[in-house]
Length: 419
Image (cartoon, rainbow, N blue to C red):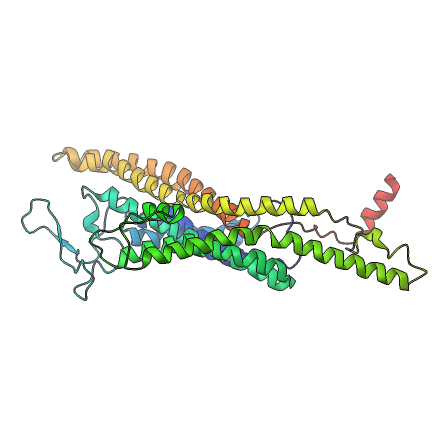
């Protein structure tokens, strides 16, 4: 994906202005840390003119930092995570009537029209629960895959727009359409399974990974989502498999046919133009630029592109799990820093707790600034950049353009004197 973009190629910048800080926020979701980033970005925007020439890097990054802080704060509210502490913004959907630590839900767990769950984000009762990591990890892992597949679908739609703009019917029918079919019929179906399990209580709920393995291997799934879901999955898998040869074979032969037809037209035109027969003959290769058409090279290139897309789609979907991994690392680091500093001071007896809290707060704030507001921000930024550069842009960006070189008489004169 390195290189100069082609003229009038689809520009992902409009989407990236939202998806970049949003994915960063999913990795860095914390109300407290996000608010600090938000305030830093707001200060940079407020004092932009004084930084224009003294700190040009901060001047250019001011709105990026502001938007990253906004989305990190929003994700923090969704995770209900404030410096590793859950905020009791609304009444919990769980209760402990006996005080023995056995929390029971007070909402309608069957989703049959009763009282709903916690109104916004994660219920604060999950913080400190014995199965907190199991629940939070499962939720963040599935959210990562959901938004990852969604972003790759947007990338394919940009590929569609390139084919439509170039009026390239071959690429549209034999690349864009089968690529979208492959994406939706397998990974889109996986997202449907995730959402269905979230919204429909199932007595013997299937494991999504096992269901996908049964779907790919043609085995029987003993735990269907609903009656007929296994048959639907088998049909979608058939379309997924059929889309691969449709990506591989037709395009090279269509290009061969177009080249042969162009050569015949060039030969016919060359016989009519007696004076220009040599310049308009078949030596031009039928492309008008003197390029030689090599069917073997075209076919090998198509094989490589098909294999790269099929295997890359699987690896790219798994790569989006870095959102879950970095979010987990951020949350756990924040929890450890709190427990080993402020929480230790709070557990001491009076008056030692008041004295120790003074020093513990300094240690906690220093570690937070160095690790979570320094190193972790850069880490989440780089991983977000990688997801956009590789997983997203590889779906449509081909490069192959030429860098614009404006007319410069001084450069021409200097080159001529050098020669």
